[in-house]
Length: 319
Ligand SMILES: Nc1nc2c(c(=O)[nH]1)N[C@H]1C(S)=C(S)[C@@H](COP(=O)(O)O)O[C@H]1N2
Ligand SMILES: [Mo]
Image 1 (cartoon, rainbow, N blue to C red):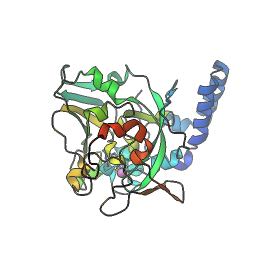
Image 2: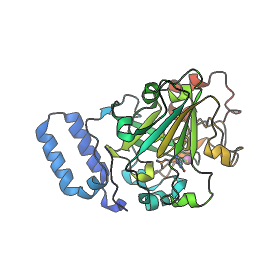
Image 3: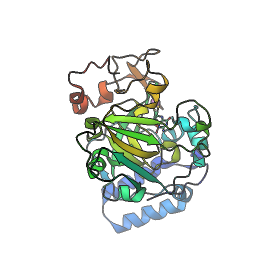
């Protein structure tokens, strides 16, 4: 499951959409061994470099919760990133995140739960879960967006395994803190480690997933390998990367962007075209790769599924 990432894979060497389409035909075609062997052979021959860097994830179930919008290109998704641990420029994560080693990886799980606190090795964490492909919109608070074909599983399924108690009102997450390998952490752009949190009912919502891959392959470091959160109805900063700790807590946890600039970034951070950022409008967004702006949808287009979580709450107060 784990990858050893080769340093500095040039995006120009990768033609992933082709690879991905081949894989999809293979998955959907399901006419078995012969097609598989051909596609597999072609992949090995043509994309050997990529396969060394990322592992294919086979037999993905397609989620009915996927958007039908066209995913962004692999290149856009892996070269235009926010991951302040590696710098502030959108290109910095792709440039420097190979300096982070992700093998071995484990996640510390603790807090208000019936199971004992434990360091869970990544493979043990993932083993009981069925990975699926979920094509989701990702909307950054900076008013750009992408569509990403994630590979992951519901966060709620993982939470249930640890049997949180009735005192567990929130889940808190932490990113790896390792300044020797994460050059952005040697400066003070944010308080380290990056922390985020969800209310328990948000975390249990079937749309919230933990992602381990995209485009049918394990994540690259710049995307938050080997394990990151994806909460599609919230601004991107809730989707914390490279998670090393999960804690069930009674009080609303701090979250990095709220700590950094509290009047601009709240805890809930639901995508809301009607509540502007103090310095810019949130009514529209630019889909990366497209010239035109489009109108932003309430809850990033997931209102039917998640609006009920916030019944009775003033979303201008709880931004
Ligand atoms: N640990 C950590 N997680 C993070 C960030 C970060 O700087 N550090 N940036 C967030 C922001 S602002 C966004 S928009 C998304 C971007 O995810 P992507 O680079 O996969 O598109 O990651 C989020 N997760
Ligand atoms: Mo963001």
